[in-house]
Amino acid sequence: MASDLAGVAAELNRMAAADHRATHRANSPDPAEQLAWRRLTAQHADRLDEIMDAHGWPTAELVGADAARAAWLIAQHADRQLDVQRRALRLMEQAAADGTADPRDLAFLRDRTLVNEGRKQIYGTQIAGVQDGAPVPWPCEDPEHMDDRRTEVGIPPFAEYIAQFPLA
Figure 1 (cartoon, helix red, strand yellow):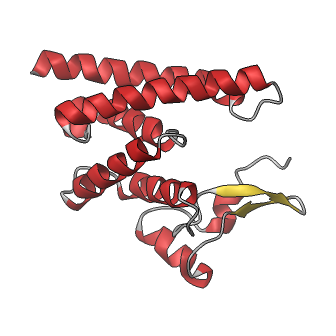
Figure 2 (cartoon, helix red, strand yellow):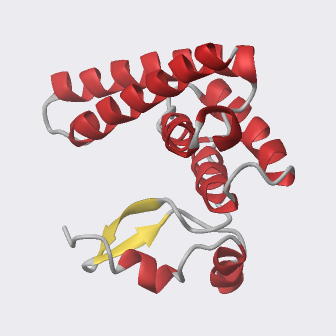
Figure 3 (cartoon, one colour):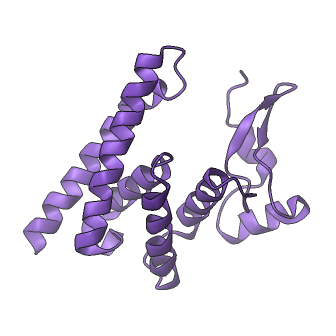
């Protein structure tokens, strides 16, 4: 089992590296580039689904910190496979409750899943666009208390968070 998990960890890390190299394709004006991004994220989501079948949520204890973060990234980008994203969210919620998943990462995945479902996000982690030169989040539940919720899971206040985005 340990050698199997080492292989899973290496595979997750390779998928995350490929994701990082291809992220620019997601919003490319070239439809072929966008299609390449969609295919890559779909392949990764399919493989993550198989990994979850075999091992549950790939926690740091199971596959190492880097591979656990890679699994989160793959789930985060599984936007067109909402069933996989929802499943990853459920498994990651249980892992976080057990103390084996990062609450910050869980908050990002929860918001991403909610936005993909057409619902309001909780933590304001998902950006809808830029308005008057400033990033604007997708609609958020109880926006007056968003920064309190962000603090609870280790995410900086929204104003500090958006300061890192280049203005487009």
